[in-house]
Image (tube, rainbow, N blue to C red; front, side, top):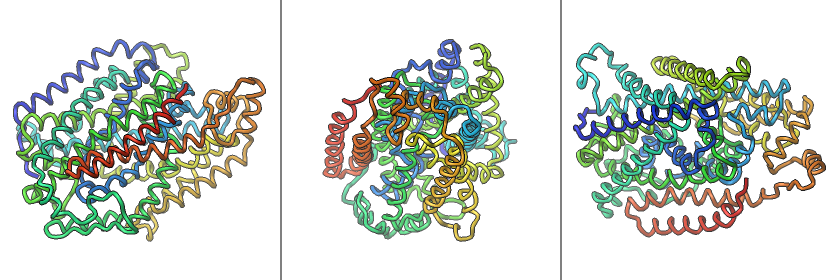
Length: 617
């Protein structure tokens, strides 16, 4: 891709934003150093709407935005289902009931929560270490590869050797690393000094930037869009959020090459894909949040009710603004295809759809000032994700290793120093991994892929079945890892979406859970009674409920399972409509946008009456 120097106003906006970050870190240093809870969780004093803004901001990452623009270009409105792979609707399960359950524990990390659920027997200790290792590996993976992607993105706009000729000694392959390390250090500065409080305030600043940029990109796209011409280029079905057994998209003319992308993605049998992604998404969501920055934001809220409100606010804050930007970039990418085609082809001559976003940002239609705003926002998105992940990994190393096993009587000063040392160590290791990315990528992706594949069964059972114990959790995670590690090496798996062998991993993991659970005694009943009385989950808790109710006759059993699951179904429709409405608006399909907006209104009323009005701590 050709390089384009930024204007003085664009550079000024980026420099101003970096200055704001430095100020935030210095200003909040004193408050964060009061104690470990202040540093890792902001003293559990941050309002839910601020944490919601922060969480939404952390999910507005560069790599995800680039990918979402790419799939919107190719798949149109059907692209709204593809992110269910993550799954995006886990926020709905959290909103409806899981965030409140998690927050009632009063824990600092997910690994500490394992002790709250399973006690301190051998199985619980093994499970605790599995979660700690999982969290650290996932965190290092996100940090290592996030900063390389960001470095490659910035290099397009700030070619290092042209901006700083004295850096000519840096090999071309490592230019993205130089930019990655540079901007990583800004994120490290405010995250290490100010902890969670600093991260939240920086995220709020980032969200405001991204909201302005998103609306501006959407307006520019709409001004340049001639609906009749635009529609004539598209395959039938591009505007439709419905689908049959197959995808039903066939690009023609100058866009015919887009069909190669559809074939390589493996989504042609769309009903099969949709069914599998819905199954995996629901099960992943019922399992609860993985031990990453999302969990830390939930644990940082002031109360269980505010935890639910925080998770619910993420969808409202994130989806409309993010998809205005994504739809705007996708529309401009299609309109400008003839002009940017040379910039979005890779070395082998094939179209790289992930270059659409930077190619559009580089185009004269994006005026000076707005380019700087978009780049500052995307830089902020990287640093938000980086800082939130760094904070989460610090929490596991300091709280679940250093204090738990080495320094149980650590003073606030010692805990603060440990956080700084752990943070610097984490960043150093992640940068080393990033620099050696070609060597460690397969290893890290393998390990984290295996851990994610084995995560679901054990984490569903821990909430809903009283007899499930620490040994069952450990065996379930281990048994799921075996097929997750082995299947990708088998000849028949070549070219098969990992999604399609998910049921095999789930089956092995569930078998491990049952074997481990039934081969060991139940968790200590005092631990179970404490967990059940504080968390108040629904599920199979009969024997524990009888004992708790006998000791406390006023205890109320949670009978809201049917209501919660109904709200989840309504919430998924609500979230999907919030994604579709801004896309339809930008592509000037105003009737469809109105239908999506009406769907948002109806589901909002249902959730107000059946969820919001019934929230409790």
